[in-house]
Length: 82
Length: 225
Image (cartoon, rainbow over all chains, first blue to last red; front, top):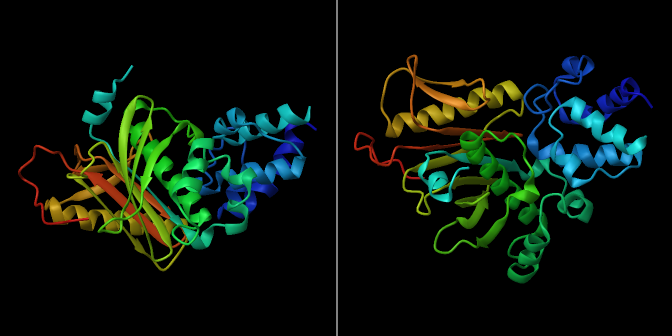
């Protein structure tokens, strides 16, 4: 699965946690989950767990703490499914 | 490297609020979820010190989260470390309310010690942290608003914080802007003031904390937390 395909699926994971659906459609690697998408930090663990369930992977703690941007998210997922 | 003494001397502030209605009790209680927030020691602390009647486990998880998030905000202002890793912010101690409604914690980040105060009220968990155990110069509070829309939260939290600031720091033209670093900054006109401010919102709740300079005699001390 390439980064584009992961990104498309990731949008579905992020959707319940952001009000800004318009911005969600145009996110890229640099989009900050909290600052740009206005996702509440209290939902970051939810996002990790939802991504784990979606891809049937386990994102380790070290990878999880680096997840600040959409690109970090894709990196963490890509690393586990390759 | 910053020393512990330096960390406690530098004025900063950090706060957080969790709307319990916006949390998932069942999910929070799963090991897969809470083990990303609580260390093994913090899980043991709950089993040894608390009963579910006294503090339900999901409330404990979010209380600890709010402490850690507050510490992160406090420390980020000093060290500019943008990584939030709950497991790397240990809460060494959490005491139940005693004669007041504050859960009091002792926590840290790196070599520094910070003190937390939290309340669970009106469906929210609210926390502020300070380098001063007595919270002498730290003011904090929260309110419930009529909307969970981001723009409404943002406006309401600024209004709340400015009203509270005006009560202890009566100046004209106080306003809050977000700095490039992402922190809220208090300005008097165009001049940034040395009063660190932290803002938080979740669902229909907004909260603030700020710390006044401890050596200033020009502030009204009437506004208690």
